Length: 78
Image (cartoon, rainbow, N blue to C red; front, top):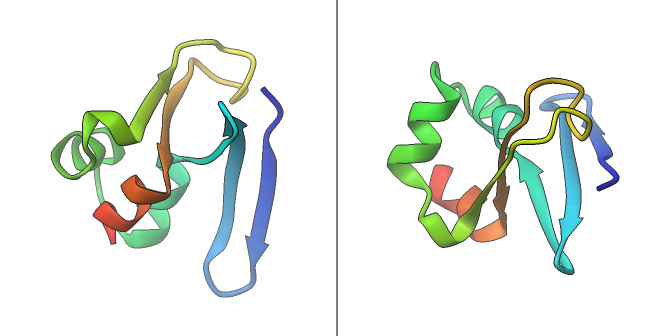
């Protein structure tokens, strides 16, 4: 999985990847931009199971994995 980084001077950076032909965004990036204090809790509370994917591989995020959310999941957080 190859990550792309979208940068905005006002909002910051959001990493994304294509998963099964659909764009997914790194949940931590989105929740931080939106001001959520706890990324995992906010994703669990607001994003439907069908709209998120937990990547457990260490290589794709450079850490111990994390949540990816699709466009519908993004709107759920907004």
